[in-house]
Length: 268
Ligand SMILES: Nc1ncnc2c1ncn2[C@@H]1O[C@H](COP(=O)(O)OP(=O)(O)OP(=O)(O)O)[C@@H](O)[C@H]1O
Image (tube, rainbow, N blue to C red):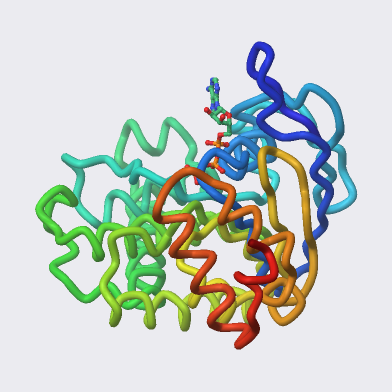
């Protein structure tokens, strides 16, 4: 796919596929086009060219709600939770695209309505257990520590029972322990048979959890392969070194250090 904003080619010929139960990461320096690619897959942007096929169907250009209902869930770089709602209600909100209630039952609050509400609450608790969220679940989400809010966002996405989950920088702002728990969580999500596609700047996490990594630089795909091949790929290190921000340089050092090669010197 390709994505353009005016004259800027944010994504320029990206191709990848991901299988059930696989963890695939999309990495690249800031502005490389990673989030734009996610936005195209989930229907928030229209690709300038190319297509997205999911589970055998062409979903290119479909509305976000239609794509979500087809089995793709995502989290956002900046959390998009309902701050005034409780933890439980945030997760239940994720389920309502799946659970169809009869509007008459809902209006009259019939026994059938309460049974389905109780089932949704039980399920929300199960997903919160799954992501390891053990705070007060009746608290307003805005009063929770940041790391816990991130867990709830993932629980809400999982409550849709997606076949593919897109995570946009889920480790941002997390401490070391929380990152370790996130790593374990992503593996458990993949073990459910869900395809996990991850955008992440934490190279340690990316190298550890991914079966495959796609690298973008200025919108172009410059590499696609298993972590070992990506670590020792001079073009990848060069892309990070070529970026203007210091953070990207630190990431280049990290990739090279993990590879145990002299990749940085080679790229320079
Ligand atoms: N809505 C938009 N309108 C115009 N330009 C945009 C828009 N969204 C992204 N861009 C531009 O497209 C390019 C790719 O941005 P994108 O956010 O996809 O990169 P990214 O790899 O996700 O970056 P980061 O790691 O910083 O999140 C950048 O040049 C950005 O300025």
